[in-house]
Amino acid sequence: MTVITTAHPLAPSWRQAPRDPNALHAGVWPAHMARNHHDMEISGVGISELVESYGTPLYVMDQAELVARATKMKSVVESACDAHGTTGSVYYATKSFLSGHVISWLAQAGLGFDVATGGELAIALAGGAPASSLEFQGNNKSLEEIRQAISAGVGAIVMDAPIEADRINDIAQELGVVQAVMVRVNTGVHADTHDYLATAREDQKFGLSPSEAFDLAQRARELPNLEFVGLHSHIGSQIFAVEGFVESATRLVDLYARLLETGEVPTMNLGGGFGIAYTEADDPMDIADLIPQIVDHVAHETSSRGLPMPHLAFEPGRIISGPAGITVYRVGVVKPVAATLPDSSVATRLYVSVDGGMSDNARPALYGAHYSARIVSRVSDAPPALVRVVGKHCESGDIVVDADFLPGDVAPGDILAVAATGAYCYSLASNYNAVGRPSVVAVHQGTHELMVEGETVANLIARDRGLGSTKRGAH
Ligand SMILES: *Cc1c(COP(=O)(O)O)cnc(C)c1O
Image (cartoon, rainbow, N blue to C red; front, side, top):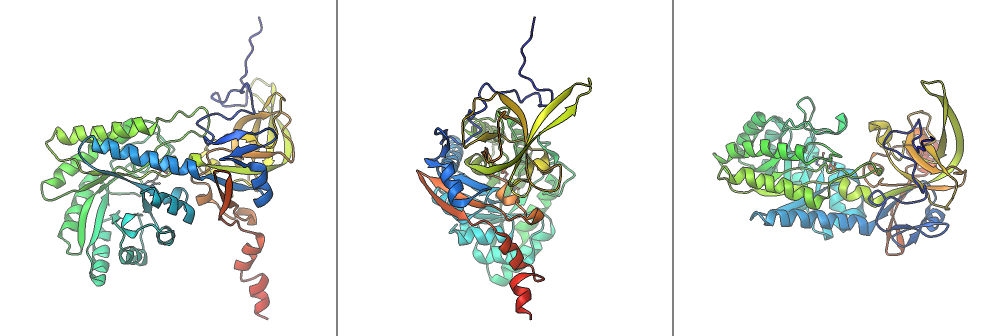
């Protein structure tokens, strides 16, 4: 008897050959993305039209998807808090994706912003975010950044080390203001994610142990130009299970209880880190279920000790921006590569080279992250082939999509889209191999608009004082 299997020996076990390698898996691709004969549309705009207008590679951001995700997060947080007689707020983590358009859309939706450098602070302010809606963090804020944040009037500065209490107090004193501060707590929770994305294990750079955090909060309460407004924690990123958040909240409430004995602790910020689907193997919890579980837990932990509920805050980035973005590439080279398996049989995978790579998406190289791809520019009934979508950079780790199935006739000239690239792609982009970073374009109800202009080689040359116009100017 013949057993028919769709498993490919070089594919990871979770990546099965799909029945239709043209289909868009719901939950991985933006909701308003669909096939339209020999093209795909995103939010009513043909991708072929975007490619014609802006070229490839191109980041495309679906405005409605991003705003809907932000609005949902905000209403879920507010209603979960309301159910326990407190208030909640959402700070968008700007490091996931930051541009003027996104700041104005999200400020209008009523979100605050988490910024971690003077650059993020300046862009958020230039984009129209009210200073009071900003939370400034980071493990090594310069004195100049602290001064900028206090002068602007940020809502709170999150202290990450004991030395920051005096630094912030001194600058606030000079400026004649009292600055609200929080303390970043490393709760020691081992979030189940990539090591570099876990930010609350003991041996890493962020935050303070609960006992150190206690001391720093007490110190802040003593200093005349600081107002201690609460505790902050962030356990990591791309986390799927509720347990880590819940355990971290328990440990935070312990500290909260101790600090309440000697003063007020108005706010508890539980951070971000909510996971999204990059492939059909990812099955993140709906935040409409996840957030109330965390909030209910904090309510249980506080009420069982007879403590008031604090104001709660969350700081999501990826779950708002990630699924709203796709990246569009053009295929240049397709090459089958044979690999010998342990049993001496030979299996082939197609290497599909596109006109971008680790310079526009560093996550596969940084974290071994997985993505999903589809041919945009045509529908094919060729049987699915295992492909590895790779970039044009000079490293074998320059992978865009490690393993997916595309129609086996994928060919030079095809336009490919990669899903869920809205977070941590543009913001981590580089000029590796002297490649300019791509443009970012917004699509909305059938229209498109440039959000961030891409870089040309001329831009790169212009910054190099040994080249081009600056050099000629020296003659
Ligand atoms: C990165 C970061 C976030 C956002 O993480 P996501 O995984 O994008 O939700 C929130 N808070 C802090 C302190 C961060 O460093």
